[in-house]
Length: 100
Image 1 (cartoon, rainbow, N blue to C red):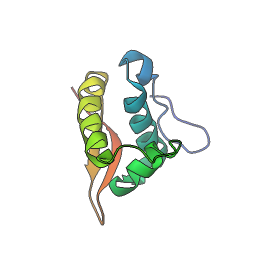
Image 2 (cartoon, one colour; image 1 turned 90 degrees about the horizontal axis):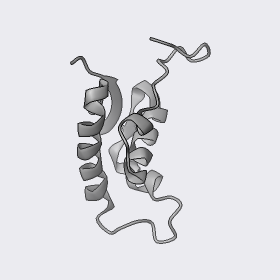
Image 3 (tube, helix red, strand yellow; image 1 turned 90 degrees about the vertical axis):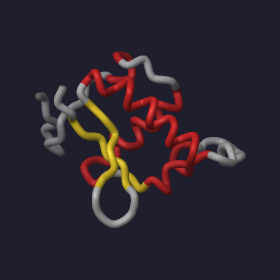
Image 4 (tube, rainbow, N blue to C red; image 1 turned 135 degrees about the vertical axis):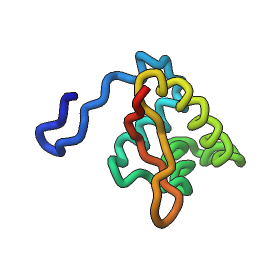
């Protein structure tokens, strides 16, 4: 395991290349990864993912992102990772290591 000398978090392999992620899957993955151990609030995901779109994304953006997370987890699980629901106040997603 390689860790960052500044923040001491594990440096992740280039999952986007190994898992062949779509642009949307990569956006979800990167958003959750950058949130760190605390995770990211699920309700904020549409705004974060579709911030660069003038229309704010699809009307059902929340459902699209949940479906994307489901498909993303199938792709990154063989690499030893998953996006899980974090416990605590509010719905949050965090990236965590899974053991095969």
